[in-house]
Image (cartoon, rainbow, N blue to C red; front, top):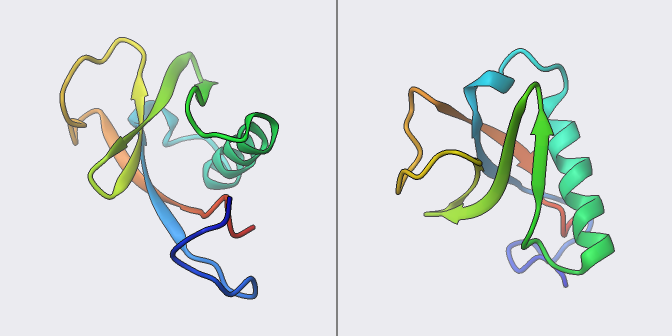
Length: 96
């Protein structure tokens, strides 16, 4: 699968990921999320089922509006709470 947003392989764009605030102190979070998500996609040929465990917090990937939400396993809210989550920019896994 290729990225529909950018057809030129020389350029890339970034996606917004909404992640748990507990991860703010982690170094190189954007790179780690990209690597884990990219590896998951290349292994499974889909993004469904992508989960991350970091710093004692387990989360799973869901689409939310125009972003990707790494929702905590115990969070049943319909949308991310700004007090519990923040946004990061991660390079597109299809472009790189």
